[in-house]
Length: 448
Image 1 (cartoon, rainbow, N blue to C red):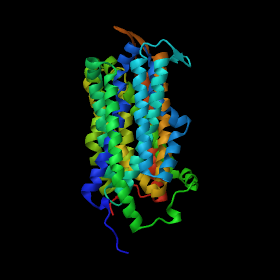
Image 2 (image 1 turned 180 degrees about the horizontal axis):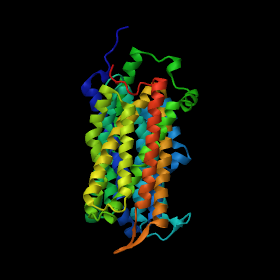
Image 3 (image 1 turned 90 degrees about the vertical axis):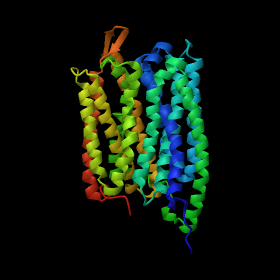
Image 4 (image 1 turned 135 degrees about the vertical axis):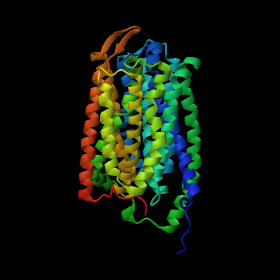
């Protein structure tokens, strides 16, 4: 049978498709991070405290963890495909963000409570939880899409570019949130995110047209056998894989030292390092800017040389250094704080550029959606628990009198982040040992 040239054989088309789906993730990352720099403004305007902000921040992962929504999302992805799952995920993101916007806009003056917490906190948290389900399912969907569109091609580079563009959304959120809120109102930064998400939804529908055509070409060229199709038995196969658990543990530990830290980093910059609040949000977003610039480069390096396991070890070591120095109470120079954020940005580029392509080496294509979903599920346990922990620690153990009221000493929280980073290094070292034993090929080039 004569083979049909596939859409992804064209460099321009496969990279164009990547840009389209990356737009959706860029919008998701913007919304995910846009409230973090506004912590102090939220506390002033809505009368939240640090514990309530921690609950709101951790709500992103609440449904994913306690109702297993990410796992269901992965199963839906492998059973019903990326187009259906991607559309569903993006609709959830739009709906959840709309609810969050309603809470901070129309419930700002509410004196009611839900389960003992302010109504605005709980409704905003509910919206953020729904958004979190959509964002995480969209993340695994896009990752599986890239693995399909760039199979046996520059897959790590493509994943790096997608992450970089997503981080652009994060950097925009950290950079503009405070200035926009001060000039146009507290709710305006989130409203911008809602509009951009709607654009991302349209973008994904456009991508679906291309993806449907590619699937038709793949079907014409190479029919799947029964053994290659997903079945629920694959879940057991994934969970009994030693590489899965090490990647999952590295993922939760690494990201727990980055995303939750960034949620509190703006306040850390203003209280400990005396950096102006307008600039503090931009500094807190520097890891995203670093990822924007460096992740595609490191992805290309992984494609060319392999060394994914080694790169993950280096990234974990850098993470330890960053949080350890932040924990030192006698270092209060703003320049040091900025340098550490830049180093965190390098680590934030190294580990994802090596980790996500490694999953595609450990598992076959038909198991990837579920594998990524299970990894993201375990990651979300950290993304839920760590912000709640840090918020509680700040309120109970770290309050100090300040010029404008209560301030926080971040020494203890930074020690907690340092300990988590040390655990990530141990897991990365174990992964390198297991890779040699099992022959996953994590340190082998991706190009064939």
